[in-house]
Image (tube, rainbow, N blue to C red):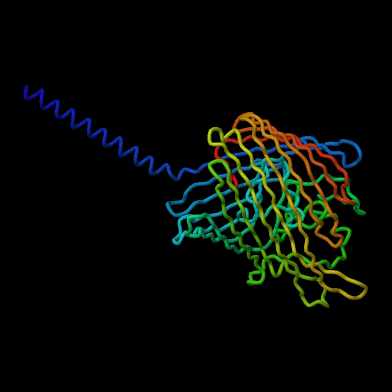
Length: 429
């Protein structure tokens, strides 16, 4: 009996020892696993058809990109994210930043290359928007969405009501876009193609645009204009300037109002200023520089019924974007600087009826960012078939009314999007 009791006690002790080792091992594995990164890949392709040349034409299937995103907590104090877009023209870094979300006094900071905290749609990549094509007000006034290198410091004010203020400093104002308007064909007097011109000046192609030797984003019309004005002394964009006057400084304030259990409203206002945005090439002006201000305001209304908010919801909103920018003009032998204020408005709604279907519409009008101040309009609608949570097919119709450019043009875009792994952008509900 004594021997049996001893064996029983020894077995019990061994069992507890094994359980302890297993639990400590699992805890150790869990503590190691928290740094395993979230990885996601999104494929975004479109078939684009338009009647810009009088009859319906298409360039076939366009791969706007395969977007690879990797993110994880570095430690309890910081978060790291990298985003690379792989397109037909090669790989391109879209985002690479460290975020510090738990600083004292309700502060958080971001540093690196990031989608700037400006406006509503600027924090979304195009495939994450409810429509296929990005708002044209960004292309007109900022050359595309603002993916900027810099630092952002945000402060959530210590009130019961949510208000957040962000102050930022960036290398410069520089837009970025893989989305283009329908083309009516080149009107250039040169026989060179955009690819030939890019090769001559050492620009590298990325999707539908090129990167110049100084990092400037160039589109086809920019390259063709270089040949048309080979002796031009137009102002140039300033890059590599480390003086305080050469950086762009911005800010944004956002707040949210909860209108009962189903409705909420996001409101924000943004601005970015760069004192030395462009510099003259005319010797008689002694290095005169031109500044630029981007400013905007946005409001978004969300309706999410508590019983079925994931597959039955509505969002609607409007975003205003303006630009106050200096241009160089000449009248006879007189050369002078001239500043223009331009403003545009983009509005939209997206209604999700069920798990499968979402429909919506958009419209925008804006003034051209040049001397002529033409009134431009673009409007349309879309329908999305959500095959599952991870892939969808979307059909979008839009009409362009750009006087003297692509006036009265209709466009159809069929988009396919698929995602594996983790992927998110912006303030999503």
